[in-house]
Length: 86
Image 1: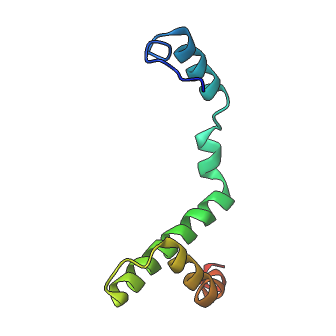
Image 2 (image 1 turned 180 degrees about the vertical axis):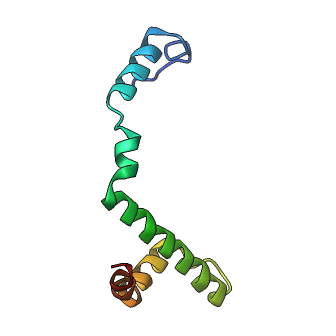
């Protein structure tokens, strides 16, 4: 098995510079993402799901987890939430 040694990927090394250049070249434009109506809708739904998770966790007296809150929110609240958003 191949392992990187600390001196191969140390800051300022050629490999470190290549990794930084390739990751910044392929990074999407954040301003375009933030302006996207689809992304804003995703953030609004995520906020509602997190709020729902908090409420259900308070009712249960323990953290119910994101997945349980997500499923419950989709089944019981998503349709009404979408109708009220329009």
